[in-house]
Image (cartoon, rainbow, N blue to C red; front, side, top):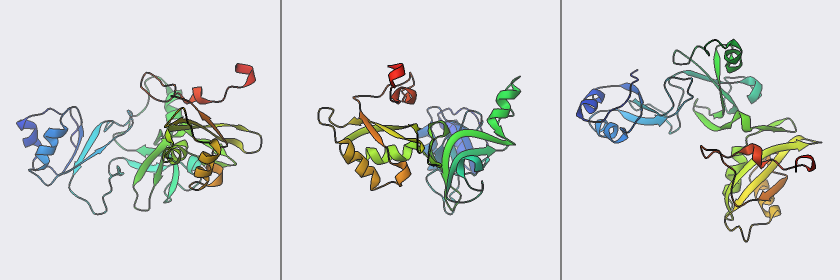
Length: 252
């Protein structure tokens, strides 16, 4: 494996020729890599990874074609598994969703002078990525959400990203975000915050719930819907999910 900053130009294209496997930190050299690919048998794939894994983020994986290759990143670098505490299944069982754990020589050893943070970041020798992922029967992983976004309804894990994707598929929805809110019977239930395609004529909340009912299991269906013109966001343009929680009488 080669890991180094990418620079453009003929020298870099010459370096790629004849290679069979490379993992490259990306800057502005995607076009240069593509030109080099035309001179070799390399298949360039783009992937990503946590900062604690030195092969990512912003990584191009370049390797020869492989049988059964899929467009999503596979586990050809560090080993990967599911945390049984979040997936509810054995960490090597297929077709489960849970927190993605990784281990291998590219994973960092720990935080400097902070054993508490290091212990929290690892499950044995496995690094907790904080990502919720699914693994298919061929061993490919697909990131579906962040573990911190997940909520538990009636004992079942709910990844908001799946519910949000269904809501966004409705023709009258421009965007959607779902958060878990306390519920006396189920522990938590979904609360959907929706940006309508037309803020002056939003869809009926009942129509969106019926739309979800046609595509999701019952425990994933949001119980309440609120319409907003835009989401509160961080400086990095991420949705501030804490600000989407319904306001109670105590904190109005």
